[in-house]
Every structure is written in C-alpha cells, then in structure tokens.
Image (cartoon, rainbow, N blue to C red; front, side):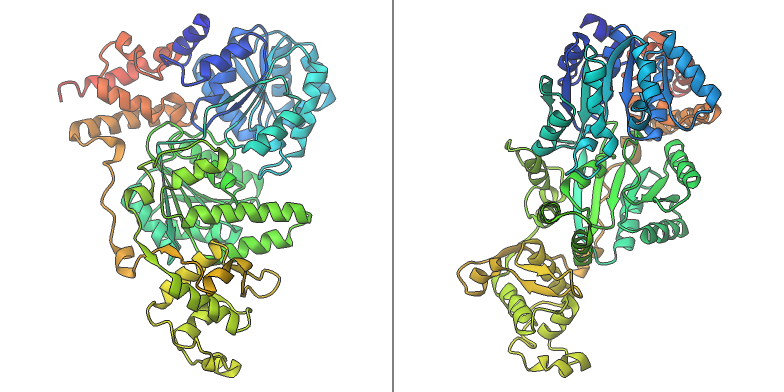
Length: 603
C-alpha cells in the first residue's frame, strides 16, 4: 500500500485516500474481486486505475460510452499514464497501433465498450496479453429492472469463464439492494468483497419547486445563483429540449440542445463544446449524461419530473463532481405525473414491470412533496441507515409552512366523486370556485353540492392541492382515458373524517416573486484580490486548454485552482504540495501557473 500511496501522490497529486479507496485498492492489488458502490465524485476511478498501475499487465476498463472513454484517457495521459481506448471513432490504422501497444505491454489502461470487448477477435487479443484486472464501470447497466439496462452488460459473465485468474471490479453510484443483488448474480461476483460507502453527496443542495412558469423560474435561478457557470437542464421531450435551449440563448444564456433525435455528429459536437467551454449550459433529455466526467457542473436542473429516484439521483449526481457546492433544482407539475403515468401504461413491459415502475414514480412523487429533510428521504430510499437532517436542502434551509388541509382535501375529493371521476384538475377547480362556464352548465355540475364551496383557496392553490393528493395516493390519474382524476381506496378514511391531513402550504405568487438572497460570491471568494487571481488562473487554464485542444478541467480542477488562490505557492516545491498537482502536471504546467500567481503576490 505504500506503493499505492506513492502513485496517488506522484501521479495524481493527492496526499491521502478517500474513505474505502485504500481497502478497495488493496483487495484488487492482491488479486481479489470487488463490488463498489460509491457516490459520484467519490473517487471510483482511482479504485481501479491505481491497482492497474500496481499489478503487472494492462487494466481493461469496460465503459458504456465513447465520450467517457475519451475523457478519461485524455485525463490519464495528462497525468503521465499510458492509456488508450478501442472504439468506433478510431481509424483502422489507429486501432492497429493500440492493439500493437497492447500486445507489446506498452499500456497501463485500455478502455473498451462492452460490445467491442465481446467480439471474439478482441477476446483472443486479450488472451494473448498480460492482464492486470477488469473494471466494469456503470455496473448497474446489467440490471433489467434498472433505468439504464444494456443487454451487452449481461454477457460480461463471460469474463470469469475466459479469464478466471484476472481480478474484476464492478463499480456504480446508483444501485438499490435489488440492483446490487442482480449485479452479483449476472456478473458472477458471489465471492467479491462488497464496498458500500453510502449515497450521500453533501455538497449538492436539493431544491424542488412547484412549476408555475418553469422556464422563467429556471432563468431566474441561473441568473441569480449560477451566472456564467456550467450546468445541465433535463427535459422530458425532444421538442421541449429544442425550445428551451433556443429560448435560453435568446435570454443571453449560452445553451445547447442534446437529444437522441439529433444527428450523431451534431450530438458529439455539442457534447464536446459542453466539455471544453466554461459556462456552457446543456439542455438535454436523459440521452445525455451517463459517464460525463466534467467536474465543474455547478447545477443540474429538471424542468420535468424524473421517472424514479434512481434516475433523479444519477442525473443530479452529475453536478459538483469536484466536491465544490452545486445545486440540484427541479420544477414539476401535475402534468408531469400524467405524462409519466401514461408512458408507463403504454410501455411494452409486462404487468409486473409496469407495477414496479409505478411504485418508483410514487417514491419520486413522495420525495417532491415531503415537508421535512429531502436528503433523509433520498438516502432512505437506498438504505435503511438513519440520517440526520442535512441542513442543505430547501426544506432544511427554509422549512415550509404546514397547514391542516383536511377540509379542503375533503372538498376536492368530494368534487371528484360527485362529478363522475372523469375530469381533470382545471375543470374540478372551476367547480370548486363556482365558475358557471358553458361546459359546467351543460353537464349540470353547477348544481353539485360542491359548486362554489372552495373560495378559501385560489385556482393556483387548488391545483397545488390536487397535485399533492395525487402524489400522496389519494387520487390517481386515468391514463387510459383523458387524464381525469379518480378516487383511490386510500381516500375513504379521509372523506369519512376518520383521519386528518397536514400538507405543506403552497407559496403565494408574492412569495414566489421574492428573490432569494445571493448564496455565494462566484468562485467562493469575497476578497476582490482573491477573486481576481481566481479569474486569472482560470484564464490561463483556458488558454492552455485551447492550445492543447482538451477540456480545461483536464489540466486542473476548479478545486485545485482554489487551493492555489488560498496557498499562493511561490516555488515548484510549494506547487507540488497543492492537491491535484502530480509530477507530470507540475512539469508541464507548473511554471505557467506560478508566473500568474507571482503577479498577484502581496496584492
């Protein structure tokens, strides 16, 4: 392990291992298998990269996306590691050069897609090469019940059959107990040591709001809290992606669209710009993001409800990979619930699969409507371990006001029942507010006992109440019809007055317009001199990155630049002590950044 620590320091520039890293590295270095569940940004990559450098032979990394391979290979080469990938972007000559390097023992790490690995020619090539280990990244892709299932991953069970002496490590940031069991079964990892370090990402602040004008709410959020910073905005449909990206550009936000319906070359170009530009916002469907290794994403926003907590956790986890503060912001509405329910109902899965997807959506809704700590509920979904309130979510920072909604809920539920359980929220709200429009009069619903009895709430507040009743299971959406609301068995005790109901009070329009106070000074520095040095270091990094045609964060992470601002190294020895500055990067970039800092010494 002393050799491992030396590699950590000299190659990657870090002084000490994070929790569980040392034990995982030792397990692999000694030839054992491992299953690792570690949150995004927790340092999973080092868990197989360092053992690959410790053991003789090449470490073979199975990765689901080409972009991730190229990103990691670029970063490893910047640290002086002999890394390469084999994928469809290489020319025949380039692929041949990689294969020759592999055969000659000139590689430390080789990245492959599962499809490429499973080709018999590739397997034969690997059988002739000395192998240090196999690393299966994004291992949750093996789960047929998961949200990112990939059939090729199931076939990776061939590895212990063809290479029984080569240790294997499977890694994921997103797996509940059922998915972990499936990984073990399908990848034949019954003898593997399991390392579960938890799911918490304390640097991420979770915030969920009711959607009233979601696009404007998003713009206000970006301008107020993340001007000029990189972020990802997720939308449910391709059309909404295109419209939102175009609208943000009109508002002066540098945004790009990304979805599966775009030509592959355009998607690749947009992804490359997102990785290399600073302050770029990507508006995307869930087709974007797996394996994106950009560490300086300062916010992840959702303009629609994700279909499960697993999806939400993975998508929000793409923010703040460098450990610095990041926001997970979401605006959702009842229409999102209707759309997702219909998608589940219309899917080709069997009844069991649809029921499971429905339960996952229910859990996501419960997270949105909870009135206490969101992180407690999020972490509780993945594990039974108790958690204290986090102090870093909207409910902890601004505890919502609660109110006795029993009477209002009874009025809403009664209106659903008396009108025939086939109408949507807007129509039901009109009945409660006593709006005798033509449709209501034609249906005779102006003569219902609930007509006009809801003047204690306005239309927006009634819509919020109906959304909460759906989220809490008192009402269900008729996805086979026209989206009307129907009562569930759960509402009977409430209607009979046998139980009460306390809900979070919806914010008024005045409260929604009130701007939140500025959270932090951009870059985290309140001193003008420090802020200026921080920007000068970022500018120098960007110039180098453009010259080398690599993403800026591959040179140094923001956290490393911040450490330079705080410690102001004046010599190569002092620069070498900065976290994230390894020997190779010190040699390549040390003088450039020392020169920038020297201009500000004593300022």
